[in-house]
Length: 245
Image (tube, rainbow, N blue to C red; front, side):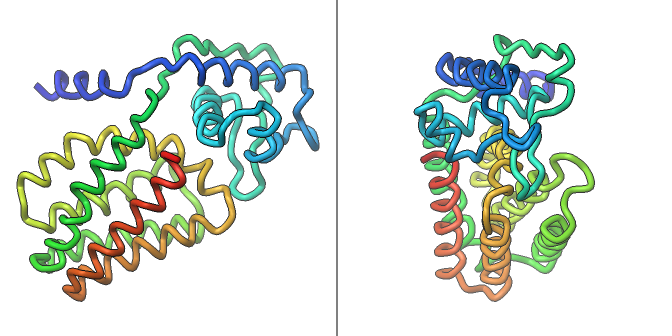
């Protein structure tokens, strides 16, 4: 049963977008002939790459996520994007097998988050228990540690981010909301997990997102329903701006 459910969820997000694959291939070609590299193995900024290939930042971001997942590039915090050594010694990724996101999928996911997470935050502020707060506090502790010292294990930032949002929904005590959140949570975590390193390498985004997480937790802790809903909405709007365009 679990295996079937996982397979069903997998099919939801398995989609091959030719435009994104084509862009990833074009970037890879430029990497191989070293025509876009600066300072050795470093790539231009996201904005510069978007201008160079005459594409939107969203489309570029997805292509970069693909190349990162294939092990072509890596993100080194605020230092930027770098090409891995293997690319120059015969490494040949198969872009035809890459899993990408369909057009408007992120828009739809953000709308679902708004439908579920905003009212859930308000209800959680009314109903949260000491156990609920303990779960959220643990998530915040890990997220703050990751902000200060970086990830010890790949993907742990996305993991604790997702666990915090799930803890908020669970604190609502509404089993229907929890069930709906579980159904699309895997999809959201998959995308955020792939995109997080790219987003968190830019400016003060890590601090902004951490502050929003902290504000959401504190509003729920203080039983401030209106503030909890407001912060949840602002958090989703920020994610929509960055991920869905």
